[in-house]
Length: 81
Image (cartoon, rainbow, N blue to C red; front, side, top):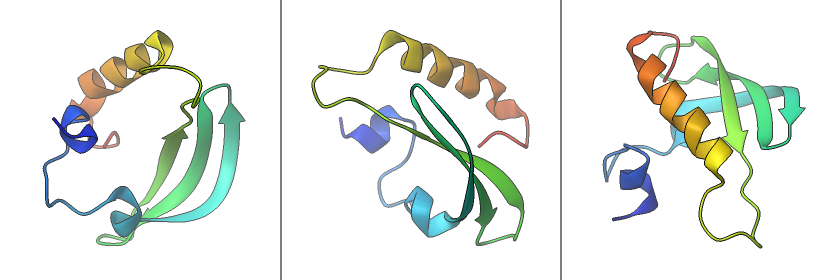
């Protein structure tokens, strides 16, 4: 299974950076950065989080998996993509 499939994205779908235009960094934490971004298709302003994974660790940290699971549960909200 490819990484994109593991994250719930279908093969052949546009990449995140094809869909969203990063405008400015609005925050940074232990696991990544948050950017103000624009949906190129609709013009809607969104928050885009880029999660940083360390090269010296095997797999995805449990805290990152918990956050991904939480965000997936919130995906019924139109503001979470």
